[in-house]
Image 1 (cartoon, helix red, strand yellow):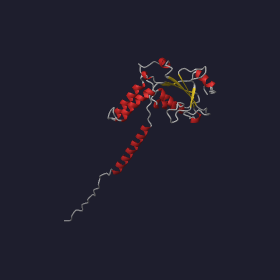
Image 2 (cartoon, helix red, strand yellow):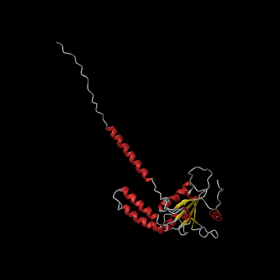
Image 3 (cartoon, rainbow, N blue to C red):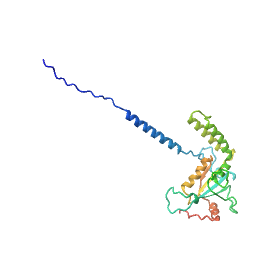
Image 4 (spheres, rainbow, N blue to C red):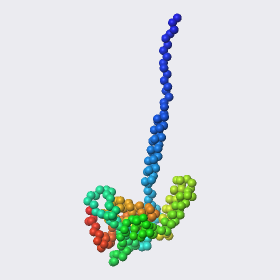
Length: 236
């Protein structure tokens, strides 16, 4: 009897090799971790004025003691275009300031700063040195809290340590008995957004939480005119 010719189907290995996928996943994870780290380094926490119901009213804030109030006037160089975010050359930006009420009679307290900072925080011709001097009591206390934060004395957990440090620093910034400065930021029509942001950065650096952006007053314009600063017409 003849043997039946049986055909045997060849079996293929159905196992899928995921090794390339693992390599790709590791590459993506590394990429996203790097992007996250880069984004964190660009994050800036700004100490903004509080809006709590139990805080001082706006009227009381505007009637702050002369020893606390300081007004910064930012004047840039006029440009032909009006592109959003246009920048002024650093050498063309002028910073004027006065403490307390403006004295129009002799402009004795109306001064021009040489710039924001020179690298020497003791040079009182620059705004950063002025801010540091005005807020020195709060800065001393916050420096103590920062050392605790660096040593993880608030908490061994990073997130909790950061949160508790920020809460402690905020509490110090809002203490009235430290006589913190109240900064009025007044850009002229020629000041660019980058000029204003530079001053806002100084509020963060010097832990100043009481500040606001305002328009120039009539007295401000008069003082600038007496110093030979000709402002562009309103709307230009």
